[in-house]
Amino acid sequence: MLTELKTLVAVARCGTFAAAGGKIGLTQSAVSSQIKRLEEALGLALFDRTGRSATLNAAGLRVVDQAEELIARFSRLGDPADSDASDVVLQLGALSSLQPSLVARALVDFRQTHRCVWSRARRCTCSTRSTWPPWTWR
Image 1 (tube, one colour):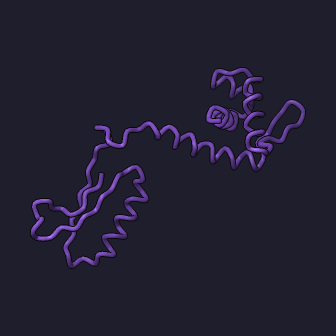
Image 2: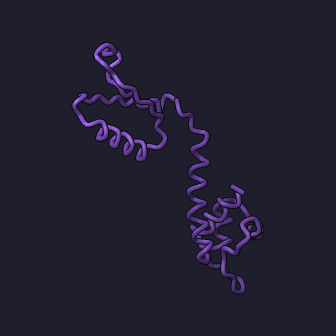
Image 3: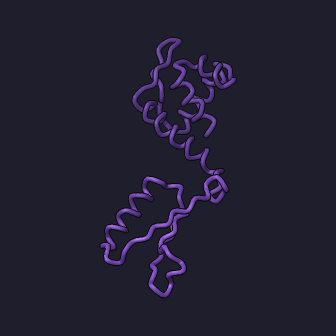
């Protein structure tokens, strides 16, 4: 279904089945067939059809938004989490007098903004100072 979702997004961006087909290397009828398969799989009409024209309806617009998100997520699946390009370490140190909830809240905010960052937190004491700072983000 990923191919059909990509075709739907192309139609939404290009405006017509023929223009989308030209952009992605398919005939108008192949685009039409893929859209039909997608509509059948989802169990709903994505376009209002009148004669020779088709316009995205409300359901279609909603599905296009979700399809763009799914396509983007799918494209990131192959990204290695520990490749050289993304092997960045964030280390955070804080005074013990700093309210722990402030640090925790900051870490949660950071994690929500940087979802592809792996994380691990640990507490540092004077005896483990050689491993300072206490939090390492990967």
